[in-house]
Amino acid sequence: MGFKRRLRPNAEFSTSSIADIVFLLLIFFLLTSKFVNQSSVKVDLPQSQADKPSDGNVSVTISADGSYFFKGEELGAGESREEKENLLIAEIQDYLSDSTLENRTINLRGDTAISYGAAAVVISAVSEMGGAVAFQTKK
Image (cartoon, rainbow, N blue to C red; front, side):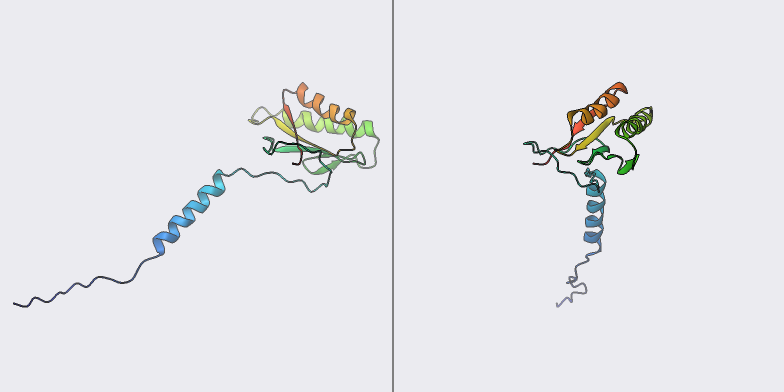
């Protein structure tokens, strides 16, 4: 008796399910990865041995020429140093006064040529509002 086989194995391979899995993995890694905020203000950061990025979402940048930047925007262009510092303190207090903030860390990006007093203004303003300061450095 000769039986004929009606079903033949399918030699085609469906790639649609693999594309779906790759797409879902891509979305997963994009949502779970932590992005490092890069500022457009160029400063010469001090050297450090640490390579762990800071936890802050907001940065304060102090350039070598005495310019103050909060969230990438220059504060008090053309004004005196005291007026710039007062504007910066007001911006920091306004930002940290939001009670819904989970992360109260502010990144301090200071040029190697800035004075300790300029950094102390930021540190004291943040600590008065119960925040933390993370210094950004380069390795």
